[in-house]
Length: 329
Figure 1: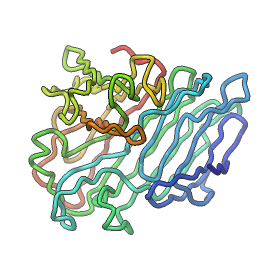
Figure 2: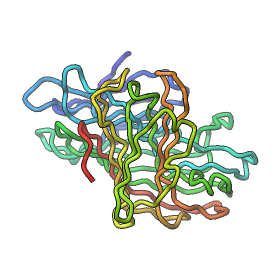
Figure 3: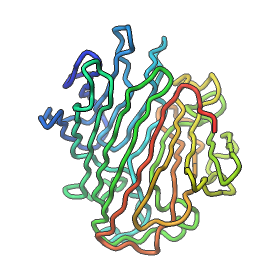
């Protein structure tokens, strides 16, 4: 894989990488200077008192982000999970009269601001991302064709055990949309954010459990092959309204082919727009045996109206933490 460094201050390194994904490339800017186009951008941070620069964040043109802690064990810790920038929605629209899952964005521009990095490499990196519905091919049926979206990512200085990424997203509907009523009933039509990963069995997985806090209880759902092809939890409940939070976790020391992959914690701080009511978390995994493809999806759902008018806007703000060891609730 060819790697092209576009930023290096001896503490942080940003590189353009090659990937074979079908999405179009996006433009990269560093401190307002264009660095050309790429489909994959990698951020690496020096481990203190070493010359090692493990990757802690990668951004794909499909809006998939992968995050891991700053430690550099031997062998290096793999990524495992992907955070998918949202929101996503399943339904019909003025241009798409049959039900479509507008699953992920197509990134057009990633602008990196290094002004909050100190000379010693500490501080935080700001990453502003935009995705427009215009000029997208109608044949890309999984791409979010019905919204203009933008996100500001704040990547905190990583530590050995975890890396924190703050996400502030905004969205605007570019045409009238009708969320699918059947999938709304099943809490899967309006997805504020999504995680994509793998669970096949107790030996082959990147994560092995979902955990979240309701009003007063902690719910832990351990994945099992017998739960494949079911919407989970079978009996859903809303997240704690004071701090909507859930974990996608790896609690054991196994999980071929990717070893001990990071756990994710998602803390949702605010949402505005057409969605209302409590936030629910849902999961689904297929019975696939393919180790090369994610087969487990996890998303945060909030109730959408029966129809959404063109021009409707909203935002979703949350924090994602990738950690070597799952946090306690």
